[in-house]
Amino acid sequence: MVWFGWGRRSKGRQAERAARDKRLAGRTRGVPLTATLADEAVGRLVALAGAMLDGKDFVAAGGLAWDDAIGETIALQAALPALELGAAALEGWREIIVYPDAFVARDLWVDDAGLMHEGEQVLVGQARHDGPVVLSAPDAHDSLALDGWNVVIHEIAHKIDMLSGDANGCPPLHKGMSRDEWADSWGEGYERFCAALDAGEEGWLDPYAAEHPAEFFAVLSEYFFEAPHWVRDDFPQIYRQLSLFYRQDPAARLARLPLSVLLSGQGATGAGGV
Image: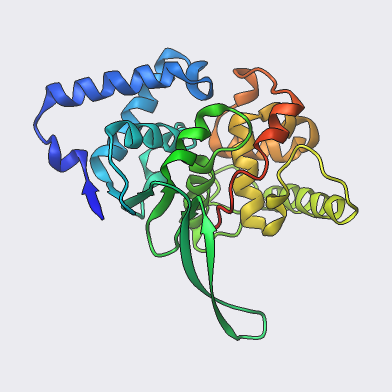
């Protein structure tokens, strides 16, 4: 593995940082996911992405040929959910490990009977409880497509969820937000979605959201930032809770995505779990 860190590599090099921030701003304006942000918001997004590049270790694994564009693209997407939350939302972990393709993850888990199991999964993204976020470089790049699927936002949503402990679909709520309203909104939406899948009904929302309440939160966070109108129409209470939590209203700045675009993005994750 090879480590890359802007903080070490460019400390004191103001011109180099300025050039990087200019590239970040250009990338922000060059993709649909962030192109509609107001100038003031772009400035804060660039600052937050720059802080990630300075403060976290980007690790090239599996023979990945590193390019600064990889880290900058990931940092911009990772900063979007934290745009109105601040840098504290991205604290508690340090590494972003990036592979040249899908990767194999080996994990241990305990079932309801208390028995321990070990298994492997092929993933394109993972937010590990022991620290790092792990991503496939091409899938992180494809997440810029604005089709309802975004592996970077998905894993950052898990990390934000973990700020309150284990990922369970309930991140630390802001002062003034009701935990009961959050639980009622998400519980009703999750049960309704799972019941529809059990009945053989599949629509615009990726079935992977039914895996666990934490995955429901992470997947709905992806759609909130990429296909907000669909979330607002079918899960209005959840959209309200997401707007209150992320302090953003993407439906007010993005055009509605056609259903065909959403369906084309389903199943791209390969997984994306915690």
